[in-house]
Image 1 (cartoon, rainbow, N blue to C red):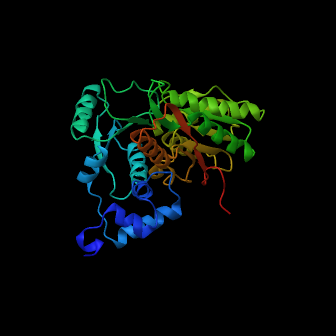
Image 2: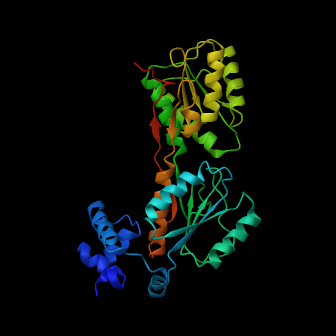
Image 3: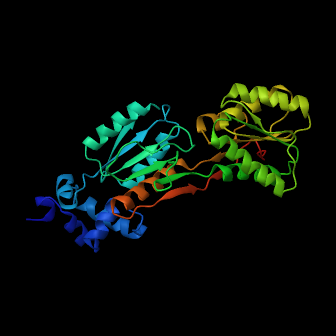
Length: 337
């Protein structure tokens, strides 16, 4: 009887791929320690044998269920969905199942969802916040490894991964300086958000290094197009020669672009505008499309998943890891030729 006829085992996959059983398991579970060429061989072997992991057998052997929980407080999914997509990439196609629960920003509901996930005997948890500010750790004993993504835990013993918001502000400012802008204003969002201050901090640091003084004190308001429009008009009234604007979000940037155009300024000819978040429904739909800072949320999800795998395997990390952001250049800072 062939392996395929009787139902392929992990050992069969490993033998066909020419690797150890441990390596085959790591490859199928998306572990970062496996070379891409090796992972490809293992997946080809698994596909050829129609290999389907036996979750029950794995649970009996390793004390694991092959499931993890993703607990989010992001109601709109703007941040949690890209993170979840990245995490699922790392978990591997079908090898680890993800249970998604929405706590809706309610601590009581979060506790209820936590108990529900633990009752399903998940091997670990990824907790995704609704905003990038530090949050209190899960109350009570989670009893499984936990990784906090996007919103880091306030407990330095916990494992957290988030985007580097100070760096994102630096990238925005450096880009405007690089394209020759020297009369720069800053419009950002809700001052109760640490990320709003972090992005301003990074922008001011980069401008100072370049010898550029902002035309005005940074303007804090709300994360909305309406605030962006009003703040841009106020900036123009006081500083009509402004030639660059750093915005704390794409919503603010889109509002600012609209107001600047309505006031007769060409974008980017007269004023170049940079947003944050790379929320594509806004950034690509703006006229012109927005140059913005991408927070690399899918990569953040992949990193959170790999950190969770390591913790489940007995090698936990501690503290906050900050992932780099990237500049996405579009028409609001560079004219197309």
